[in-house]
Image (cartoon, rainbow, N blue to C red):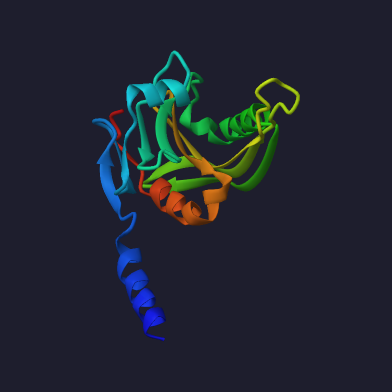
Length: 185
């Protein structure tokens, strides 16, 4: 009895202090509230996770390096009034990028006075069972938001392995709802 009370007390005391959201300045124009155990990715992590000629504006990971948040600028240019056309385009891109997609949420929402295109989904990239290195399928939970502003498309991405989805899904929503982008970007 005493052990269960002690464990319950510790859990009730420790849980509220884990992953408190902290306002983080990504650059001069973008802020987001990230869990307090997130830190900027090293150049090596960025090169491995975002192999592209275009580096992210900002990329963060947690202490175990299993949960990531990034901000990038898309190569596609859109007008703000074309947000619904862009939404269909980005949705098609998501379905082309992965072998399997289970869409959880697809919407255009207003955050801080701006229209964000939102996609929340589970993805799978098939492995290669017959290759020499026998790659297993990769299952991920993804929460992606697009913001069209001044002819640019900003991409905000929160993702983790599927086995951590239950733990991070609510936090991902709070992080993505905290995004603030200045008008002068």
